[in-house]
Amino acid sequence: MAYEFYPKFPRLLLWSMIEIAIICSDMQEVIGTAIAFSLLSNGRIPLFVGVLITMVDTFTFLLIDRYGFRKLEFIFALLIATMAVTFGFEFFVVKPDIVDLISGTLLPYCPDCGRKEFLQAISVVGAVIMPHNLYLHSALVKSRKIDRSQRRNISEANLYYFIECFKSCEGQSTIPDRQLFPNNTYPVEADIYKGGIFLGCQFGLTALYVWGVGIMAAGQSSTMTGTYAGQFTMEGFLQIKWPRWRRVLFTRSIAIVPTLSLALKTQGVQNLTGMNDLLNCVQMIQLPFALLPIITFTAHRKIMFDFCTTLTGQVFAFFTSLLVIAINLYFSFDYIMAELEGTWMAWIMLIGPGSIYITFVLYLIITCLQSMSLLSLNLFDSIPFLKREDSQFTISAPWVKITNFSEQIGSSRDPIDATSSQTFQ
Image 1: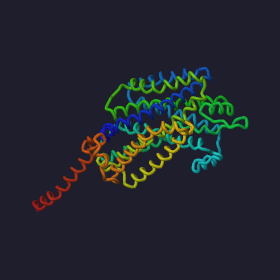
Image 2 (image 1 turned 45 degrees about the vertical axis):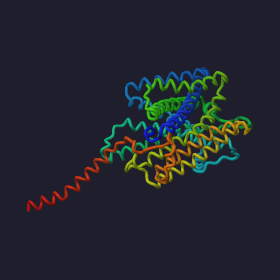
Image 3 (image 1 turned 120 degrees about the vertical axis):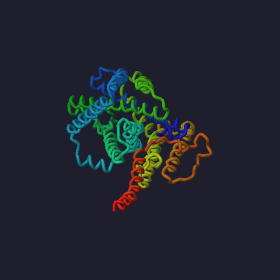
């Protein structure tokens, strides 16, 4: 849909932003899987070897795809079930206070929290939503054969699609590993590696190995979703169809090179896990390029026809997205300035990319408002590379044609029946 809706220049820019999000997510998956191998082998598998293993095992999963997409979906279900069982086991082993758990979920609060802790909390949004997954879920629906000539069949498919997306986002590998208690008076910044070590020390080796298996399952599942998301976005935005093995080699090579270099340099997990905040920050920045197009398409009547979202839903989704985007941008800017120590050189470095970024986000916002019919001015008609025409859509809506045809037959049948009855009388 993005290929037909957006002009070439913004479409290529939008695709590049999604590719950056996919690569950053892929780096997180490489890091998590390498740490899982290190935990399960008691440190016998070095981190750089674990990083290399993640590249090989991805191609192993792709071999299963040759036997049908349903087989691969079964592997996905098995990995997600492994995550549910392992993390559920840890939950019952740790036995957290249910009252505190519910109160912390409904009213999140932590004493003496500063900007760094709030950044970690906000980065969960980018880590859980994962911008490229919105494109992945949309593309996976295409693999289902639906009788689109009947409106009720489409409504039923939309219901199951909503449930699937909800459970997919709910089952993301966001692990509450912040509650570590050091054996001294100094605080320790927790991560998935230290979380596993803590579980092993506190509850035995079984808890550590179960944690490692869960982390590995989460990494492998996320690896495959990133692979398919990359393929679908490339096919959709560029109309280029690469074999999946070539797509994996391209994306995974870009993700592995910096991760492998860091693993060889540090020989430890401290810097690898420290990269997580930076990668989450990048995904937070990429979030507008997934949310705004989704709202734009679902609000456009020439795309969705009678499945178009209501005006109330459009306005709610739009302003909620703007709020999330504003919060993410604020904390991302705060994180970058803190890392660069707020020097004048940092401001100079951010002026160029920041201006391009804000301009492009404003373009997407204006286009979204036009799609929602809240803005009638065609502000980009005078700019050749931004001019857009809705007449170029090649969208089929067979249920609309059949419904209209049935109504025409129904309306024309009444006078015929009346005439016939008079004749027989």
